Amino acid sequence: MALSGVALAVAGLAVIALCAVRLWRGIGRLEAQLRAVRERAGPGYASVREHASRLRSRE
Image 1 (cartoon, helix red, strand yellow):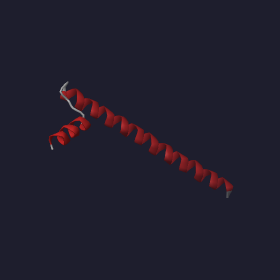
Image 2 (cartoon, helix red, strand yellow):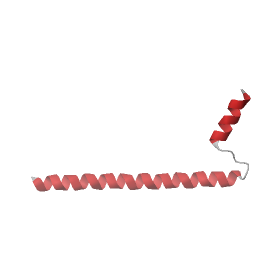
Image 3 (cartoon, one colour):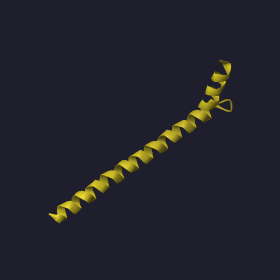
Image 4 (spheres, one colour):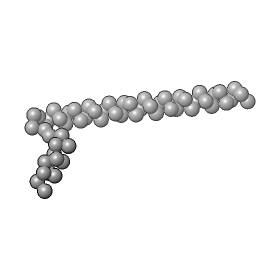
């Protein structure tokens, strides 16, 4: 009975580790996509915050 509890705990930790790795890779992929968008936009690229502040200042 104790062995099955240990096995369950190990399996749970493995699932958590797998989810963490997939999340980490997903974040890395999103960062790469954002970097590519910024490079394509060139030096005139404004961040979302800058754009929002410009819109607010027009009001």
